[in-house]
Length: 197
Image 1: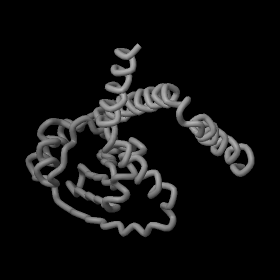
Image 2: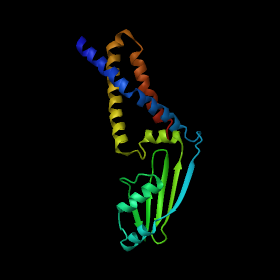
Image 3: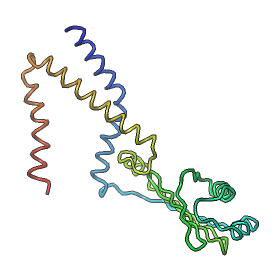
């Protein structure tokens, strides 16, 4: 029994250490998301214009792409705008290319017209609070962050369950344990039933 209890405590402190920073981040961004209307965000928008090099324009006009971005065009766009177009969807319509470039805390897009060679690029940065809020929601964060959120959630479940088992172990000497746990359940249930419409 003592060995099982020691293992439980070990799992509890290891899981708490692993999820400490993540829990703080998600708790703080929970507050900022809940009060998004009161937190003023100052967006900064950057616009750029450029012209496609004539040789590249002629090559694309001779063999207009129907889907995707040809490697030479991709390389020029990435160098010109200092962006990464890896795994970005490209939309072609009547000789015009459009690529949406959403990201946490901001947005961007580019448009290229083959006939004129005119490139338009716009990038909006909504600030670090918006960035952290988007991390909280997993918005435009990619597969690695999505995996992190799932693993972090599993570690939080482990932390909570081992904490519950530790509370059960010590409940006999602490009479307020179960009433407090019950209160932690009853308050959100009552709010959900009586206040949320």
